[in-house]
Image (cartoon, rainbow, N blue to C red; front, side, top):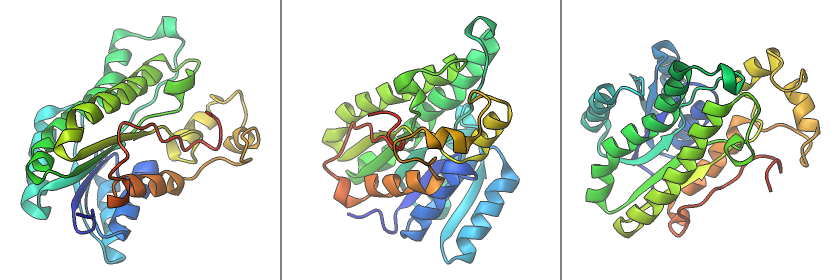
Amino acid sequence: MSFFGCTAIVTGGASGIGLAISERLADDGAKVAIFDVDADAGEHAVKEITDDGGVAIACQVDVSDRAAVDAAVERVRRELGHVLVLVNAAGKDSFERFQDVTTEMWERIISINLTGTFHVTQSVLPDMVDAKWGRIVNISSSSAQTGAVMMAPYSASKGGMIALTKTLALELGPLGITVNTIPPGAIDTPMSRRAASEGRFGGGTLEDVGRHLPVKRIGIPEDIAAACAYLVSDEAGYVTGQIIGVNGGRVT
């Protein structure tokens, strides 16, 4: 079974890495449901995909809200069919010294990045179990592999995604479901541009960061989307529980 014609959900799919993944999966023949808190961005992404001949719908969803997630997944089943591909790309960052991180900050980051991944994955899983085939890709972060100054909640949440990926790969592999994670490095996204403008990269620009990488450039969202497209394909049926670093050599 190929993912061509399958229904895919991409969380955080209306901008940045998530948008590139939504567009790539649609180009490759998937019916794409974009889950995003930004309703306008979601509808704009759907228009771009459908104008190019793809099939897509947008669902305004806060992935930290389980009831909202379950309702959106049911809508996807009604309108596009059972969900056999899931990409958890929704994420929120924060930049605070650890001693200044409040409980509220910590819980909000964890609730979106990690608990949100749990919610959506658990909600769609029955479809994959019934089909005896499924593909799950979690977009984590290279900051979880190296640590990142002033990003304790974010790095911890993304590290949790990596651990969850490995655990689910073991548990779901016998059911025909693969689970992998892509931890991006420096990628040119609105989130990264905002962080650079706030001096989060030592006062340098994203381009400055890229010049220090082995490949001498920062990544683009399409770099992540290409790896994701492979991981959800039949060709990756023997790949599970893996950390597929797409980071220009930042983490080796």
